[in-house]
Length: 314
Image 1 (cartoon, rainbow, N blue to C red):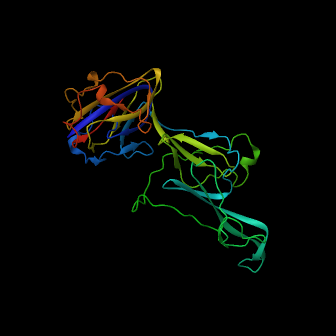
Image 2 (cartoon, one colour):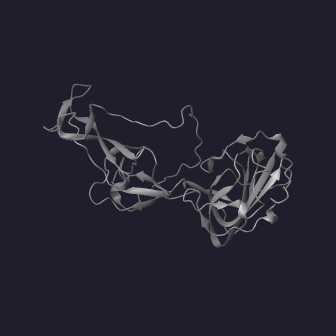
Image 3 (cartoon, one colour):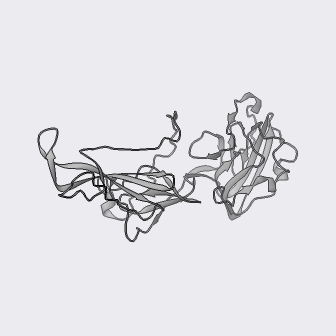
């Protein structure tokens, strides 16, 4: 079994691949007494504390999406939007009603009938509204309505069957209303269900106003160190592979270092913090510009992969 650490200052660490970060601390329970997590070779995001043991002078920081201009021709606008990336196609569903489409409700009163519309896109930016001919609305069936007399409809693709429990660390607004008074009204700041990838290093959130908000891929939360050096200690984990990769951004005076330790919390020769050259700059795992920690420490992780690893970030 092994253990590791990474050191940060004036830096932001967004995620890791086949690794996590830690700081060695006094009087800490030996790694051999912990039950290791098997992460295989999957990316580990900091959206919760699943991989995290101890934070020391660093914080988990919620990132802010960037709003893009509306599409010139066909913005996606509506109520209770759901967006799904289905292969190479983006599919959108939302609720609507028509002023002249009246029917009796459950209480026998005249009311506008609710229905759901459908749109699709090849790039997640400009949208097409197919004429499906399924239902007549306002005297015409040349529309994109897929259901009528439906109040709630929420389709989804389940990529993680069996997963039912998730930890939510942040409860503040992810997209604030801003200065527009209309965005402060009842149900006026809704976004579409799902966050979908719209580029090699980009993911998108759709707002009911027609604007699209973007984030760097997997960039929901980062581990942030300020002027004071800090660290993050992970839980034990097992991994596979020959490299440790990180996604990070440092300031001009900031840096990151990493160390791998054994089950007794002792540095492994060749993988000590002092063996790691300071990592400076910006690199992203998903953009193909990821930083291999092996450029800074040791030769490769062949001798430690498959064991139990903890990391330190300082």
